Length: 220
Image: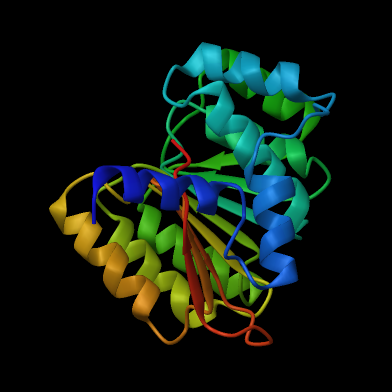
């Protein structure tokens, strides 16, 4: 396949062509893609991106839209870096519990989070705390896994507790050969129903009402 053909295919996928499921098409066109009409909280999301420097404002706005669209009843974030991703996700669901385990948010970002959301931070053995939190809640809504070498062990804890409303977002799926291989293996897992590859970010869902399907898009 030529470079031109690959680029055309990617552009077609970016526009949503080839996505047969109406729900998936809507998700691609109106959530993953940058919307024409910005949310009123975008300035805070953009500010968090500038303060942290670990994720672009465009990426953070996409995380905001995903969380806003999914409407999870609880959020767990692991190794969320300096807080830009945490701020984007938490602001989208500022009325539900949002727990960050592992990394402390930048001081200025933490002020935004504590003032505007139900955010809290925990330090300690991240895997153990994740297991305890999931067990106590009897599952999870949205699980966000930032750039961390522990992604495999976190997923091992989360998968048995996932239900049809659970969603997992994983950063850095093309970080190295090992993670690329892991990503291919995890999307083939029969427990994963619909998955999305956004180039550097992966999304895993578990709703058995849908057919198993994987989508790839060029979203950097």
